[in-house]
Structure formats: C-alpha cells, structure tokens
Length: 338
Image (cartoon, rainbow, N blue to C red; front, side):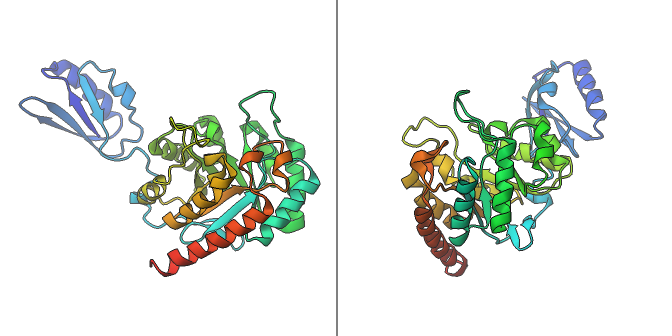
C-alpha cells in the first residue's frame, strides 16, 4: 500500500499518521520527492482501512499495490480449489458440473419430475428456490420451509445433491440437509450473512451482485473464507448495464479474469443473465468454452405455468439438447486445445 502525502504536509501531521500506522505492525518507508512524498507500507495491510487514512489531513491519496483479499488470492494459493459437494461430485481443478432445476419449487410432483429429467440429461446437482427474493412484494415468494422439504424428497428420489438460496442467517437451521447454500446477487454484500456462512462447513455458491466489481465480489468471498469456510463456488450471473435486450449483461470476461486472480472455482448462470430462453444455450456453450467450471441452468417441465421466471427456463427437452452441445464443447476444449 502507498500513501501519497499532500505537498508541504506539516511534519506533525505526518508523524501522527505514522503513529496510527504503527499499531498495524507494518514497516513504513518514507520517500521524499521533488513534487510528491509517499509512505510505503510493507506487510499485511488487509486490516488498514483506506477511508480512515483519507481522513488524515496530510493524506492526498491511498493506493493498494497488492489486492486487499488474501485468502481467495491465487498468489497465496496457486493450486485451484476443488470443492467436493458429495462423493464423486467435485467442482474446480478440471471438474465440470451442471446444476439444473426450476427457479422455484412449486409442488412435489413438479420438483421430482424435473429432477429426474435433468439427471437423465447429465446434470449432477438439483437447483430450486424455496425462499425467493422478488422485486415486488406481491410476487410469489416461494414455499419456504415446505419448499426445502420438497427438495429433500427430490434428493431422496434421485440421489442428486440440492442447491438452494438462503436469505437470512436466521434460516440456517432449516438448511441442515441442503448440500450447497446459495447466496443470491442481492445478498452478495450482506456481510453478517456471509460471516455466518463462513462458520459453516457446507459449500457456498456466491453469486455476483447486480452492479458489483470483481474485486467487491472477491471481497465478499473473503468474508466467508476469513471465518473458516474455504468451500466457495463463485457464480457469474450477469450485471446491470444500459442494455435492455437481455435481463442482464453476462460478463464472460470475468471468467479468465477470475482464473488469474483467484483459486476458487467459477460457474456461470446464463438463465438469470439473459432472462430469455433462446439465449441460454449459446451462452452456456460459450461459458464452457471459455473455461468455466460449471453451469447453473433453470429447467421447468411447463415454463408457461411457472410461478417464477418461466421466460428464461428451458424445457427438459431443450435442456437435453443443450447438454449434448455442452458435452461436445467440453470434449473439444479438453482435447483439441490442450
């Protein structure tokens, strides 16, 4: 970290700043130039808050030389993290998985039928919303605890691990039989929830926020890891831009960027990114081609009657065709390009 001092900053103000920094057990190197003086901080600056430094009257600017996230940083963990969801089902380190299912759990018949269909097509995990964050308070909010029970029935019927979203740390006792806890885009910076999930041993699927940078996303993952849980799966699900042709703008460039910056596995959600059924397949294939560690795709047995996000849900037949193309792309990527 480098602190740029204001021109002709009084020595007494600089000394006060240095005394404050001494509490962080850092080495402080002062460099005095003709037009600019700086303080270089050597050591772990994770706990140093930039906004606090800017309150000192002698400080002009503060710049980090090293990323503020440590636990999720690839520099400190060069080998890719492999998250084991269940025996034989791993994500990361060359392991590619597809999570599929309806946006929301509606009935026992619906969730079991979809689970059986997506499993036949090659999906290895079942998704389904029990608690649904909706923009409108009048929209379907999910079956809540009953929805979790229905997901467990689908798991018993198919053997598929279940992935579902949590909205509050108070709900954690209800999630004891959930295999992967999903943090939705709206809760990416719900720091109290992230800290609570950091005390769990279950894998956490952390979706990117609607308008968050990659660094902010990784800092949210850092919250979870700092509490002791290393089992994090990042999920790119599109960000809000000025474009209106799709629900969001899928940032596929985030995949290679994350591969450079973090050791955590990264999957892609083309369903929420586009909001349009016919765009899901090409973006799913593109995600597989660019190096994603998996996909999460919405599938409904009758999208026109879906209580949530039917317009972006594939039918089981469409999902089956998409999976065949994804498999071909994966085979090409892993053989022809390596």
